[in-house]
Image 1 (cartoon, rainbow, N blue to C red):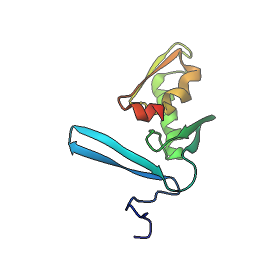
Image 2: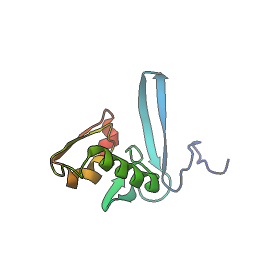
Image 3: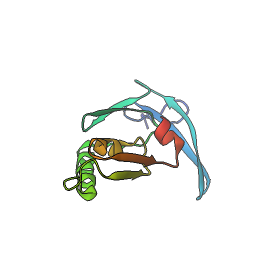
Image 4: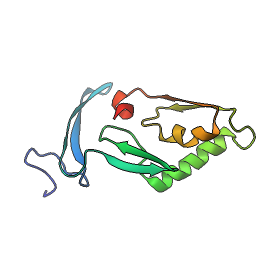
Length: 121
């Protein structure tokens, strides 16, 4: 409809659009991303931390639910009993929002991600 540019790419909330092409179910490759309108990054805040996100980065975009998720992670880590003694593994971490949000209460945080763009960008 009216939310597409000349190449047919979908316009996304004044941010950017791109595509993912998958040859089969086990492999995928990110296509080019073109900024259609506005800045090339989106600034998001969580627990006093600021993240500048590119279209390929991964972040919990529902801010209210992300706050609740951090609360759940803190409770599951048992920081009340042993603050600054726990090692937190933030698996499939994306930009590391969850791990970074609890880092001040942990001895160490280790993030692990298989998609380099989810972290790098």
